[in-house]
Image (tube, rainbow, N blue to C red; front, side):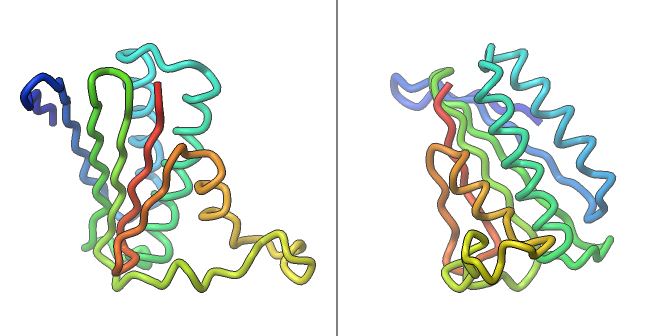
Length: 144
């Protein structure tokens, strides 16, 4: 879905994806990011960061938020601000979590864990990362 809006002098374009809570939905995320890369001439390094962050956030929403409940959806919204900034919002229908209580994956006792690095990676690759208070929505900013 595409919605073009003119807010005073700021040109904003909105996109929305609604995905089932299955890991197969990652293909739709990849296709979406590829389309955005081409449409807005996103540089390769920024493209890689966006794809990694959206994949991680979507996986977290499917596995941890919605617990792979196929009756629940993952929502991805994108706001393109004046062709200079991409603001993605990824949300799920789960109960949320307290993101401030996540263990540090770089701590010696966590180095060999096979999971638990997604949020850490997202925070380091996005220009800005904001969780809602419930912990079931993340907003990611990228300059293009």
